[in-house]
Length: 146
Image 1 (cartoon, rainbow, N blue to C red):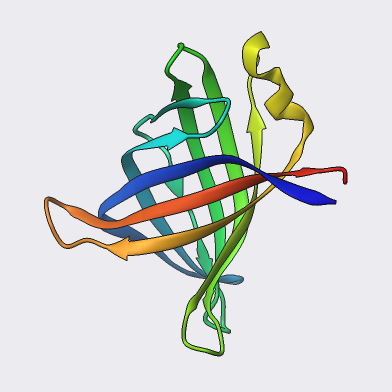
Image 2: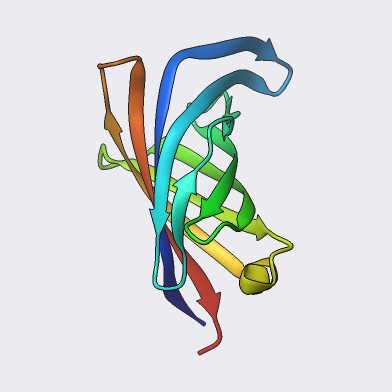
């Protein structure tokens, strides 16, 4: 098994964060994605407004990610992306942010996205301007034979 770079995906999250509150499995939050872009060797475009992350903060301090966004390619295709993952501080003090995205599209030019396994890792830059709270950059990879 090996990894091939699919794309880099960047989205800005804006305030306010909605705190739904403590439920039996943790504390539910909602981060709304304002906008963003994505680019890779075989696709490029923008992140449409309306998506976001619905993470669940657990008792151990980790965030169980539930990311859902709609992508629009530069050539007009729409792609739904959903990603489950984890965000926590690692023992060295850095951030561990990993997920496993999946894609859905009916556009023939991008149907190949429906039939692969993907993994991703992220970095976060905190923002304190113009109503934004953070910019998240994901590097997404296709798992291929090899």
